[in-house]
Image (tube, rainbow, N blue to C red):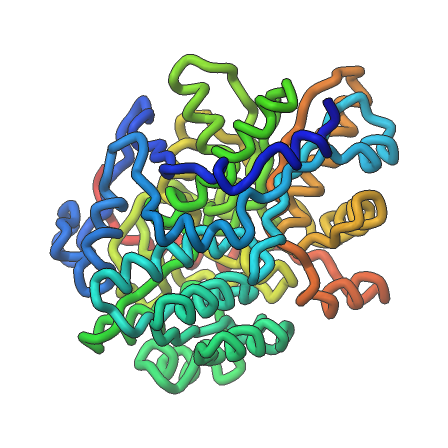
Amino acid sequence: MTMDQVKYLLDESDIPQAWYNIAADLPVPLPPPLHPGTQQPLGPADLAPLFPMSLIEQEVSTERYIEIPRPVRDVYRQWRVTPLYRARRLEQALGTPAKIYYKYEGVSPSGSHKPNTAVAQAFFNSEAGVRRISTETGAGQWGSSLAFAGALFGIEVKVFMVRVSFDQKPYRKALMQAYGAECIASPSELTEAGRAILAADPASPGSLGIAISEAVEVAAKNDDTKYALGSVLNHVLLHQTVIGLEALKQLERAGDYPDIVIGCAGGGSNLAGIAFPFLGEQLRGGKKVRVIACEPAACPSLTRGKYAYDFGDTAHLTPLVKMHTLGSTFMPPGFHAGGLRYHGMAPLVSHLKELGLIEARALQQRGCFEAALQFARAEGILPAPESSHAVKGAVDEALRCKEEGQARTILLNLSGHGHFDMGAYTDYLSGKLEDRDYDAPAVARALEQIPAVGG
């Protein structure tokens, strides 16, 4: 049976009925989030100003499966089940004995994996009577996804978009506006957090940490507004597991199983989405898989960050979570994979890295763009700059299989297309794109400001 045949055997009845919660299978419990003032574990009431109770319950749940509401599944049917392809032409181009599969999330309305959680968060907010949501976005995939979901459920969406991406990716802003959302360059003059940053640096390129501060401030100061996050938090990673759950079933029908699972990593949601269901199988006695998180060398939280309690935002408005962090005040350079410009990594992903269940690899952007174009010319799909990190990781592993003469099976999450990122590809093709290393002294200064928290 060919992979193309397997793809067409799946239909909307194969959309998962429940999300998978890896917290149920962890060998060591996840360290709890802490109140920034008391440094005591957070209670539900501490999160209530930002999130509806249904999402708070998911955030702290240790149930293995959490039912996906019918209205959410009904929206998922627009693009799910997403296709799983065998990259045969890429395999031939590489001359590798490895089998490469890719789960393609770029078929969603906004072109990435982000609607998997945007639709769920909009639904649960709508059920709680919320009519306004504030959020942040880096490259714009999350902002456009939440704008799409907000339009479906009658919720006004205000998006603070990192300034460098706001300038680099005007069509993402246009897509958000088309869905009815308001898109604001961050840092902005609309919030105390934004004004403070601009006072110190009027030309600030912004960061996800700053944009989070602005969005959280808006939600905290307005009783009619809640906050939504596109990655990092447990409930966000939970919603993304539809990706891996579908891939498990698709590969089963193909008679295959991965040796290696790869995703790009910024906040951790698409990596978790593809990998957590496979790690869950492993933790319950199934086959062991290598999970590789591919992050940018310019913002290498997993490979160069410190595992410690830190704030999720620059203005220190959020709870303290234990994660791999470069320091909440770290300002990464303006490289093109804007969705990966976050100072920290999801607590669940960080915890699994500490337990030795996940590997991490830092990659330079030129090599990622080279791999992305090789992928596009073989498979016909142009990856988003973020997703190109996973492609590069898969190419490297496939070439290693070639060197070692090993026929391993590689699964990667192609988390989105690059159709709104042609400026980045134009820069690469014209020789203007440069590799960017992280600023080690800046990281050292930011890490000095991490709160002193025991545990």
